[in-house]
Image (cartoon, rainbow, N blue to C red; front, side, top):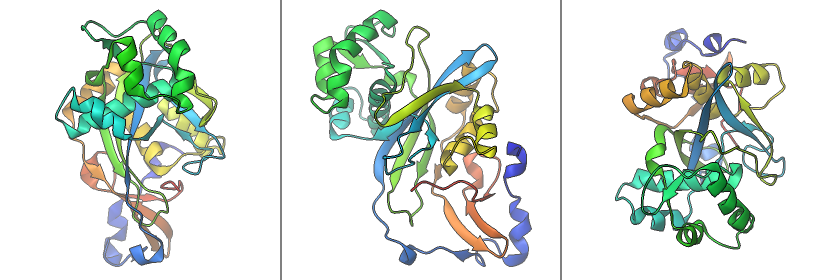
Amino acid sequence: MRAASWRVNAARFDKVGHPADFRAMTEAEKPNPPARPAATVLLLRDGPAGLEVFMVIRHHAIDFASGAAVFPGGRVEEADRDIAAKMSASETDVFRVAAVREAFEECGVLLATERHGGPLIGGDRMRAVEAGHRAELNAGARGFASVLEEENLVPAIDRMVHFAHWITPINRPKRFDTHFFAAEAPADQLAVHDGHEAVDSHWIHPAKVIEEADAGRMTLVFATRLNLQRLARHKTVAEVLDAARREPVVTVLPKMYKTDEGRFISIPAEAGYGGEVFPAIDAPAN
């Protein structure tokens, strides 16, 4: 199924009074836990056939998006706030620090500079840091701040371009308030999944992921599909980052509806995903 035909024209629902006459799922139907802060990173590179994004396959034992193809990411930790406070007063930069940490923990990609300044650290330097600290970091035996301190490194938060902001729908049992960041992967740092939360990984064209999901060979959650569609509009990493810097980030809190025609998900039209109402063929996330 082509991405362009997947969205639904909201005008189809005008005759039933969209959105007021939808049989909306209400907060009373399911628990409404608070949305926990989280960060996701869209690691990008220019491959032989065009733009590629790094995707990981969640372990089936993970209770959020288990078995799904997702972008690397996870919860914001209190230590991320401490690191960010030394660098910036921006709340969004807390999420950028978390995105840098998650990219290192999940993928072995470290977007950082030496404390005295300069370019991003190279592959050899990253691999030395990885060999000395990544296992302990993933095991929870030490924190990211102590790794940075010992290695005299600073997260390269300026490389994290704000791409999107999604909040899990109110009627889901586990909810996240997630900021998405796009970043170019250093050519000499090879992304590899961690083997714990993620059991497989791919560098793949965004449209190919959607094609695989539509054929039943991959599982996607709703936010991942729509952000893949946004990526697929562009041919290069530079195009993605330039567009993300220009376009405002609109918060998306999907709303789920039932009609006689099935289940649908609505999002703000101004969020830039090419539509307002979409069929609920992917879960918003569990």
